[in-house]
Image (cartoon, rainbow, N blue to C red):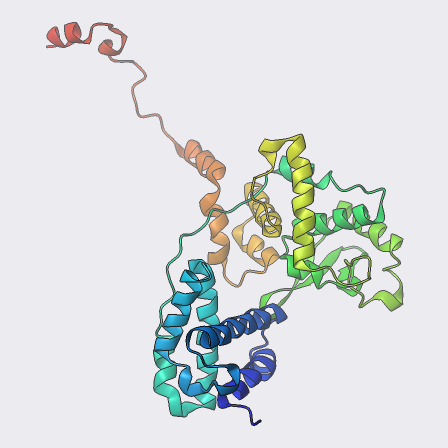
Length: 338
């Protein structure tokens, strides 16, 4: 059976355009792929059009709006998830403008669908004491515990995204002074982050115990499971929740009820800011494109705000209390007021 123009468009978009021309990460491509799987499911379930009979003529603004509404009403997707799916569809339409310009007007209608405004969530981070408690939980007498301590300590120290850590190989780490690590972030952008000596001690111990310093292991995943396969984000999330629960049992106030791998990244950024590190340097460590993104940490650091206000505060209010504040009988004071 000859593939439809929709099938060809999706195939070329995911396998050629995104990786080759846009240099999209595997995570972005996977997210976009999931969007189209959901869209095809919607068309089969709600429109009774199966994938083999799905053409670009069915890909309309009206249909996309119905699909987005279906996501939220039937699948109970949040506004943020809806926006992620819409971003994938917008990207596909930008691609179609050049590949199938005969439907240009429809592609522009779809790109005019607005994202929903979402509430900005609070930055969820741990105190220094909370990070210390969390990192005390892995049992370093075991190979797995040593791996987990090295993993989470490195994630915190570098302020790295979880995928950046999982994509690491031994070749990305410089174990001679000056100690550094090369991280590949969003858009395949590389950045060099300095490592502290104490962190390198943990890493060396972990790598030596797993023969990761051997030349033939240069491209092996730095963090792997019992099958020698690269850890997954879901696997790391599971480990973090387990250690967080252990730490919470020892000192509940130090560990938030909700914690994610990104909380470690937020924690590092907040601790750097509280230590007086300039936002420009924090931006570079985190791999943000713009310092405007990094400014979120300055906005939520209430401790630093209070200290700044107290530093410039001038006491302009008289210290003497009014007579009536010491008088038990306010009515009598008011009667005698001249």
